[in-house]
Image (cartoon, rainbow, N blue to C red; front, side, top):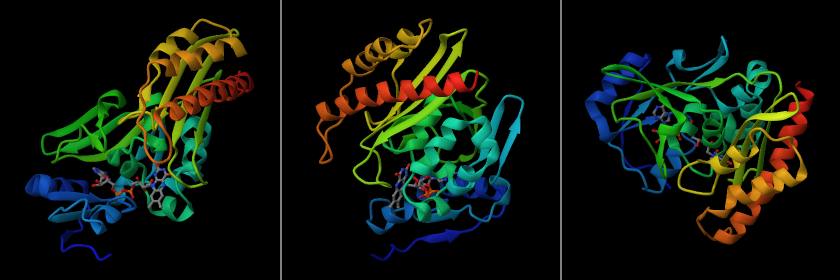
Length: 290
Ligand SMILES: Cc1cc2nc3c(=O)[nH]c(=O)nc-3n(C[C@H](O)[C@H](O)[C@H](O)COP(=O)(O)OP(=O)(O)OC[C@H]3O[C@@H](n4cnc5c(N)ncnc54)[C@H](O)[C@@H]3O)c2cc1C
């Protein structure tokens, strides 16, 4: 299908991009890797008057590490982040999730910022961002704002980014000693969006769990933390019984959506299995990283 007619702008600096966003507001769409936006245009599900192509803004790409955090520029390609030694060492949960996104061709164009700005609730990166309490840095005409992940995802394909703001980077906390992580998902075929996905981070201190984070993809219209299960885990020693209890607590109150890939009940069963599997894998990983 051909794209509808659309004006095209290609700024080369963040400042230019923000001026264009401020001028066109809701009439504009930012074009990053185009892996979600271009199909939406082709299918006439998005009808912006102007595309603001940010591929020429070099300052938006790259991975850097500072004290206790790793910052990923919004235009960093998914495959570049996936190949990054810094990401692999310091944010292993992100490194585990990246290869599960689509196929190589998608990851070589798709960007970290594009995935997180698109906010598909079935996508891997929003669940990782929620699990790790990532911070979203946006810039607009009135300056910079840092939005915590808990406030970023507002609904289906909807974030708290304002129309005149550009997502410029996302920062993740570095996993310390004793922190083990795992990303689990069930998809119909390799490369498909997950039916259910789960990001897990578990920290062990002297044999007991001192921090637990579980964030689901595909269970709601936003990525969602299993807070009850996290509370249940903290202070306890890892065991099969504990992980069974956590799986029940994480899923009992959930009312996931049904679609042609699975009923709500099926998603709950998959989610419980992923909690057990993810916690075991994260605990094993945490022992290795003591
Ligand atoms: C066949 C196929 C399979 C896929 N499978 C998966 C999968 O399994 N898991 C998965 O997570 N994803 C999957 N994707 C989506 C892929 O990860 C996309 O790359 C991603 O969702 C969007 O990133 P993008 O850089 O292509 O963004 P674009 O498509 O360019 O933009 C997406 C949206 O984000 C906005 N946006 C982009 N960047 C910014 C910014 N810096 N500031 C403000 N707004 C911005 C755009 O305006 C648009 O609304 C798949 C895509 C395809 C085509």
